[in-house]
Image (cartoon, rainbow, N blue to C red; front, side, top):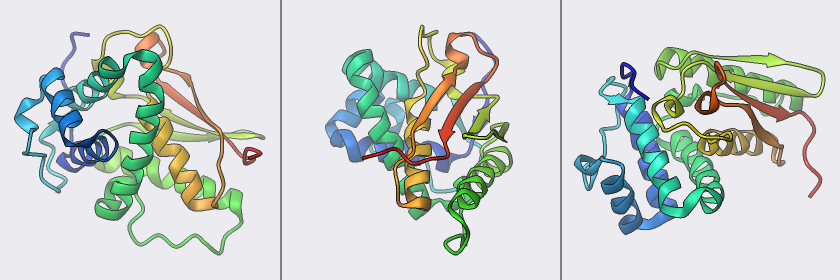
Length: 207
């Protein structure tokens, strides 16, 4: 998709690459970086700072290369795992890009915690990641709405494809509630929607 590129902080891309390495191993990550036209990052991940030197196109290319590596069916599970690892790496090393620096929510009711963490993550996306994002609440779910997504720099898809973000949101809900909540992408820029929309069920799934 030919469009002007959009910058993002180095730390955001670094966290994704660390998560890919955690899930796929070093050799798998090198293969992905080569396939995605990102060989400059082999053994040379972006620095851990908020300088706006990485791009949405690079973030999207890394995800697309994982999808190409495993095929659309196999990639879903891997990208969800990468998304969950992305949240954990972000929480540990880059809480600012998640909006979770110094956060203390444990004493609040569960639904309040869910809403607050989503709002914190949306605010950080806007202020730190250059990614316009908002949260809407309905009776049975929260909606995490992303207006600019790296999938806009990926080839068009016939189905929603932002499984890394789904994994991030799943792990965020598990972290804040101790339970699994269903997260699904109900609209995706990659197949023609005006934004990427993620539905997060308020009630935990039955295990």
